[in-house]
Image 1 (cartoon, helix red, strand yellow):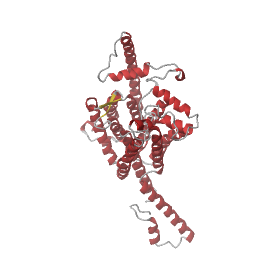
Image 2 (cartoon, one colour; image 1 turned 90 degrees about the horizontal axis):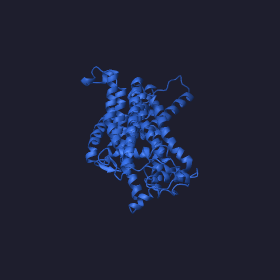
Image 3 (cartoon, rainbow, N blue to C red; image 1 turned 180 degrees about the horizontal axis):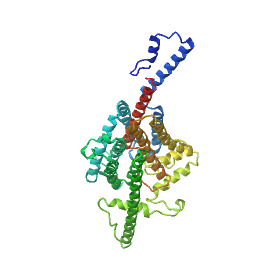
Image 4 (cartoon, rainbow, N blue to C red; image 1 turned 30 degrees about the vertical axis):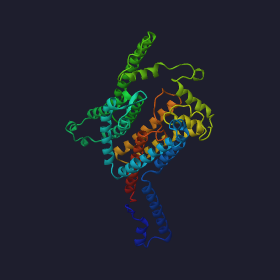
Length: 448
């Protein structure tokens, strides 16, 4: 037997009496197997998690540093220095690594109870900060997104994903509160809906795309957790009906705004929280059906036009790293549109590799999840990378004009403080749980 806790497995073999019925060749094979096991165990202990997840993280960080250095020339020009944007981004990545990835992978591997604590704290603090955001938050791009230097959306995302996984995975006997003492499947589902409502609802008022991403991730978790299908379909029907009513209301707002503009007035909802409705109405009903190559460059279509120019400039093979021509013209080239710069400099192959990395992350986490019997670990190992993949696909869809324009960073690549921290926290949890799964598997096979 190989002992965990730092002991050398080879010493157990050398100190044990060799059975007389084993030949020298058999003993040599056994020693080699123990050496290989010790080597793999040492590697996993040093890395603290699955090598595939580590590899994906390292590659994404490398791409981020290289492409941000190339795409941030516009930002560097505004800051009168060439290294501030890149150095600031590198500091965020290092902070995310040491504070979240290294710490959380150790805690998550030691005991999943720490993941539950992190989820509860993130959920409560995120909901409270979202409630205070309209009153004390800092307005960015027409919406309140930042409060006290913190983006509550990231806290709500981490908290909601973990708490949903806990609620879906929990047994009836795990509900200790009086309200849940006589738990039923319907009451459990009401709890899930309540958690989604108090997080996704306020987020939608400030950042609709983030709310949609979080909602899709939540439904994915409930589907994977085998929540009663009739509840999911009914809720989906209500969501679709509500979306249809919202679109109808926005069309009415569009007609109202048009009539007021024709009469020389201003928009009817320029003040308060309802001002976000103007943004949604504009994105839905002010799109130009004229092909991009026939449109004139304006402030409204600038981002989409320059993003398409960057992709076309790649000519399929790319202009090479650091040779982007659109980085000085494309607004937010270092954040919301960094995928366009990646496409321009690395071509179809580089853009496809970046997309593939997020799919491989989900695939690898799924492969690990089926190796454990713990339902909470299985849901976390699939739900967390699923949210990362959905956000990445939304970013790529916006960049390639496959969906309406909205600001979403490319996970772990785009410039950002709280976005980097939030994604790093998710990676830290996945790495910690993958280490716990490895230990569990070794114990079951009698290798530890």
